[in-house]
Image (cartoon, rainbow, N blue to C red; front, side, top):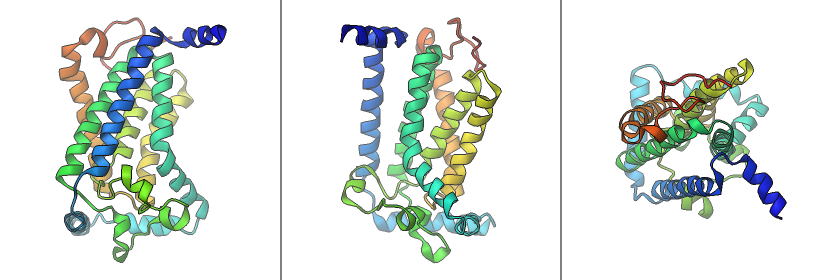
Length: 264
C-alpha cells in the first residue's frame, strides 16, 4: 500500500496537500455551479419568450441556419450519435481529463486555467439567472429536432436530470466556453503539431455539436466564446495582479509571461 502511495506521490508536482486543495476547489465550485444552474427559479413562460426572441433575432438577421444544418446531418445517423455522445459526455470527461493532465504535466499553467474556469462559471450563472432561455430543441415548430431525446437514452425531463440541469440555461453555451478555454490552452502548452491541431479543432467541433443537437443557438455559441475571453481577461488582469507569483500565466521555468508555448 505504501509503495502504491509513493508511486502516486511521485506524479504529484506539489504533493498530496496541494492536489487535495485543487480537487476541493474544483468539486466545490462545480457543485455550486450545477446546483445554481439547476435550481435557479426560472419561469417557463419567460424562458420560452426569450428563446423566441433569439429565434426572431436570428431570423431578422438572416442567420437562422441551425435547422438547415440539422437537416443536412440527420440522415447520417452516425454523425448525430457522435454529436449526442460528445454533448452528453465531453463537458465532464474532456474538461476534467484535460485539467488533470494540465495539473500533472504542465503544473505551472494549471492555476491560471483553473481561475479562468471559475470566473467563466460565475459569469455564466449571471446569464442563466438573469436571462433564462429555452434552447432550440423546445421549438420544433421552427424546424429544430431534439436529437438527444429522440436518438439517445437520455431524457431531459427525467427527475434525475432536472436536479442538476436547468432546461432554460441556454445562454451562454458553457460547452463552447470550456471548449475554447481548453483548446487555446492546449495549443499553447502542447509540444507536438498534431496535438496543437487537435486542440485548435476542438472549439469548432463543440460549436458544431451544440448546434446540430439543438441544445444551443449560434448566439449562445458566440456568447460562450465571449465568456471565455472575459474569463481570460479577468484571470490575466485582476487575479494575476492579486497573486502574480501563483496565478499569472507561468512558463516552465516559473517566470511570468504572456501566453506562449511552454517549452520542454
